[in-house]
Length: 394
Image (cartoon, rainbow, N blue to C red):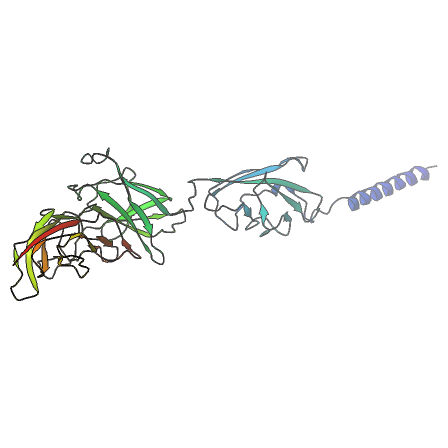
């Protein structure tokens, strides 16, 4: 009778051991890695294509190791990166424990409502969390163009002007890194003190009077345009790409002012032997503009009055403008040139003609002369004329 209880106690002990072993075998080995979603947190989301301006990360919410609310990442990039096709540059979690999809370097379109990135456990792929990644533009607006669109002298900024004066033309010369802005102001304008208003399609405008380009002040500035000073501007886009250099040319509509509108030569004897009578410096003219004027001949003669029946020969009266000062680039602003006249000795009578000068500006030489209009030769001015009368007597 005493052996039965002992046997029962033995069987109970064996059962406990077996249950303990079964329980031990069914539990996880504490040395095995766990699918830990608590640490599946992104602390950064660098982009391959552009550096972001700012980032805001909200991590997923977990309950009992399971995701109950997905996380979100809000990224702001500069306007200079216009395309919203972007990719993750680097996954900063342990790759032996976690994977991410879409993967590193996989381009995704963020122009819609965003892209969901999934972080999954490598131990238990069913364990995962999610981030909704959205990208938007921010910071300074991006300006793609780099162009000067307008230039003027406003009367409100230039009290000496009666009205606002717009640029006559803005020319971007082809096959050249240089461009030009031409402005015509009234005679008597002080070229040394003018405040321009510049409009542009660009991120920034810079100016140069000499040396390096500097940022043009937002409120403008008084500029000395008086020859030989030079004022140049250029625009830049948001990437720092520069436009052409625009040289600003300021002058007057009628840079040549004759001493008189009608020139009368002394009387000429028809029988003096030589074929021509020459009059040097018979009259003066003044450069009332802002650039040197070279010597020149008329473009054509009109309104000829020749008391010779059916005369169809060469001009009897011709003229030219010359520079009395040798070694200079021309008659400088404010200085005087001379008018020379040549008269052919023909029959007696009163002869008259009107000399018409075609005055043009050379961008390359920065001079006024009588070049035919061509590439970088600009027709900016009025065509001055001079009436010349000569009396020939026997």
